[in-house]
Length: 428
Image (tube, rainbow, N blue to C red):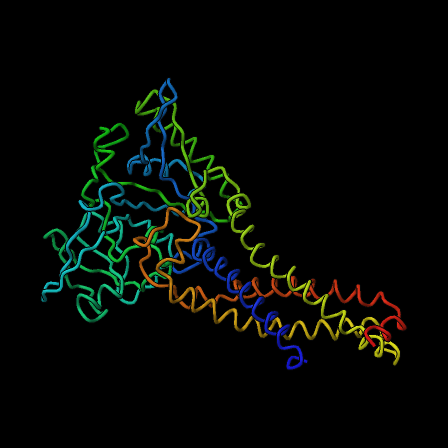
């Protein structure tokens, strides 16, 4: 039958392959943003506190960031916070934060943006240590560092580098641990980075700064961010409310400001999708849903028209089968099996096409539908874990199969409404 209907077969398989490839691309982009990728395997429970808005009487405001002293007091007073970590980065003036890192026995030199973190940071993300360990609370004021395996190989040609030294801005740091490289692909995620040192060594970190700092220092300074891990996803709202109440009280107790304070605490997906802290997930991914429906529904409607035309040419065949005792169920099963075979072939071609598109063009494919992501924020290529994720593949296949079954079922049911005599005499 496929040889007899080559045009129909080719259009059906090509349409299915194209729709699956486009839908798969959307799913891969969403999975990169929101999926449990190493070491951020608990994204569904991760909360991000990185923004304080101070508004004056006129309603205008300025953005500030949580201070380490406030966070320490917050952890002591909170009843819900169990795992809390802090990270500081050069958000506005990255050139001033770029550090020259070189090995102590070679001329290898690279430029890197260190991640300044506290000891609690290591409890939030499931970093796998190739060698060594994370630095401890007692070592936060010591010049120690944790680096990725790729950086260790680049500098020392081996991952067995614990005890050796690297130099950041001419300061020597002892390596205490080596971790596997992240699978997150992007540099704007909480776990991104090739070198991690204590936040107490950050260039703009000052333990005496509490809340009110000069506006110029805000522009040129770093960005302190607190991360918290909820015990369950349902606990996130309770933690948000508690942190907001306690932090405002801490500011008032210390007389930091008399203006109105807004505390914005985001769930991970809210930050990743660049939406407001009170947004819901359905609204955030609505744009993706529309695209997904367009990629799957429009081809399915076209296939429905093709199958309807094909069923008209097969009315005589259906009439003969009915005359020899075939039931409607048997005829429907035959047509569905045929279309499932076409769908399976189209799916295989579609997945191959997806991997070619995504894997070979990862430098721009991840930037689709997100103005916040640029080529500069793509650290590593898309990994096989992202492409061969069973959940992603099963979701796309299920959607494609359901739509293709629907596109075949409707014309078949309409054809079966014809009586046997009308079917037998069709185009005799």
